[in-house]
Length: 409
View 1 (cartoon, rainbow, N blue to C red):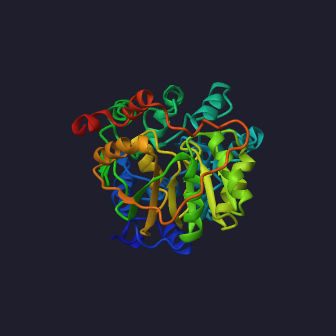
View 2 (cartoon, rainbow, N blue to C red):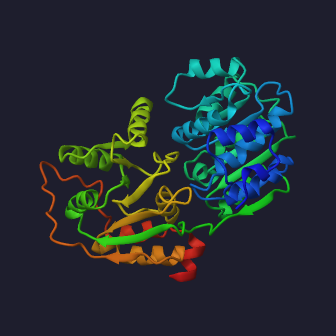
């Protein structure tokens, strides 16, 4: 493993890394930082928890130390507000007194304050495409002197429908710039779009493009829908640690949080209908240990980067293979080990086998010790978490990566 002290970084950044207890570079950082420092475009496949944020921040800040930025120097585009906040946090660890604060351009926060930060001299902007596109259209932000563009989690931005906004934003940028793209997957659709933005990029790949980290123990319990809650509560009691629980829908998140709180567990939740202050509070409570578990939907979970999550629970079976990889990637970060548990009902047995084949992994089948109490239903039945009928289920599972499925199914 390479030490940060071996990389050609300034004494100032080396000191900031030491102060933040960053000593050893991850493989992604060790591979990305040298070509990025040379100004080359980078196209990297890297899963969450591999240190990719520092891989692009350090070269950007190194270049800024040796140049005199005229306005906004670097733009980092991300899919969600939570990921933007995490990147700003990493930037703040490094910037000290030599760099101005970064501007965070996202929905849910005061536009007035965001514009104020830009006008006060921000040289780095971290933004979601929708909010930034709006500011560009209204000519409230000037990107004509930009030198570096970063597309973080490009595959997720494609999934979320941001590509038209990204195209319009990139069209407003100087053509003479450095572009770095990071993605957990580089399927043909992603490569086709990103190929328009990079010039002779250095290709960096770490691990399988679609495969959970080897430090994650993968296991599955077959359990009926009405006994999932009892099994989750049993795990929470029997296996200590911090839990991230995935539900398929916003309503499912709400129902889980309400029931677990009623039963004495400290649970937070993040989903699309929660306000930004509510999301921030839930994430802060989770990070500081005030809540044992956080319940999230796939989209809202982007940007949750907490190093000591011991357990990920797929309360609802993931719709996409990529979602499974992203979910379980929230544990076993920074060299730690973790456990990813998936709840499967009898209609999803085939789906689980397809998932194993698509990812080339083996998921251990577990038996439930003792009897589980069925969940009591009060009032109308909530169908938001029920599995589709077999006909609709089959079409849903075909959303697994086509090329991979055709190889195995």
